[in-house]
Length: 124
Image (tube, rainbow, N blue to C red; front, side, top):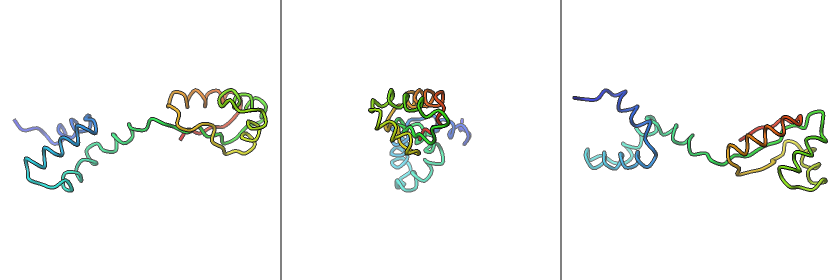
């Protein structure tokens, strides 16, 4: 029994990147095609979803300190371990990077703390 195109696409969209690479290699051998032909179909089938899943490191950006700059400085010192002057300079120099290369959970925790102190924050 033949599979419908949507069933095949659904199955491919659930595969890991490595599984897709192996599938492409198997298609090359079976149908005697080049990688350029097979790769052109792979991104449409689920390559974008796989790329979105791969991001594991995030950057926390302070975009504004709000009306209570002192509280934001205190939170910045706690998060970064900076001294008073460095934390004050970071807060007054917005937009500024608070931390780079942190996990999604840590980035969200930092954002929550800073927002509660009155700051505006972006996670990139």
